[in-house]
Image 1 (tube, rainbow, N blue to C red):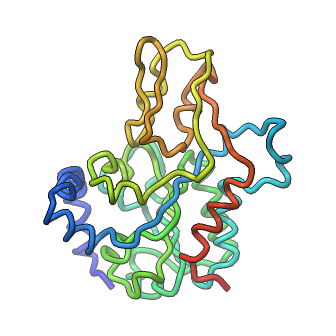
Image 2: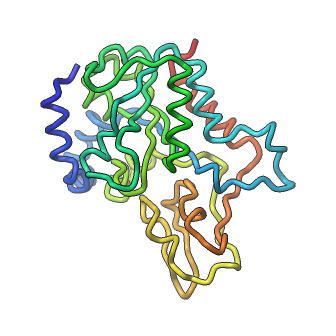
Amino acid sequence: MRPLWFVSLLKAGFPGRFLLARLTRLPVLGKIMDHHFFRGDRMILMPRESVISVDEKLPLPGSMVLPAGLVEHFVSNAKSLWIMNACICRQAAGCRDYPVDLGCLFMGEAVHGINPELGRPATREHALEHVRKCSGAGLVHLAGRNRLDPFWLGVKPAYRLFTVCSCCPCCCLWKMLPDLSGKIESRITGVPGVSLEVTDACNGCGDCTGVCFVNAIRVESGRAVISAACRACGRCAEACSRKAIRVRIEPGAFDRARDILSPLVDLR
């Protein structure tokens, strides 16, 4: 269990995360940091449901697993649940655009070691309500195993902690993804089978470029261009007033994400 002074220290050092991320690219130091802080990570970013449209090539909405439903699946089947009192990232960054009091949701045996001054055990009903509040506040779910969380929380065993972050585009820890080594950066992905497409309706206005937390979209020659760094969260599609960016979902995409993440969760 980490004392509160340690958490305060982390908040003070939060702006320096980009420099630390760049250090992971150094041959020897990068291997050491990878081993201690990122080993075994596997996290998947969910797209915003508000930008998902189902066309004739996909199953009917009632039979389709969607992002919130995927998170709710794990909540409904996890052995232990814990809701943090606040988002440490938004607290550290002084966020004014998104609720600071909507913190991470943790699952698994390791939650019992979290400092009780940082959060509280949750029933399934309270955890589901929390997930819905986060979605309603415009936050994006990032779910999986992240070794940094058991480190800063001081809990064990590390492999028994499953994280559901509710991320804003301005303060997220993972804004440092473009600065991390390729090996570490590749472990945080979008949902397999979900991608974004810029349509002919794009006029290159640039509204989409300020909302991507990994800087994966830019305007070139009067048209938005999406790079391979895209995690398909859909914020750019949401920001586009012309609806010129489309979220494409292959059938069964969220079922595949569920199958990837399920072994990382303590399920009943």
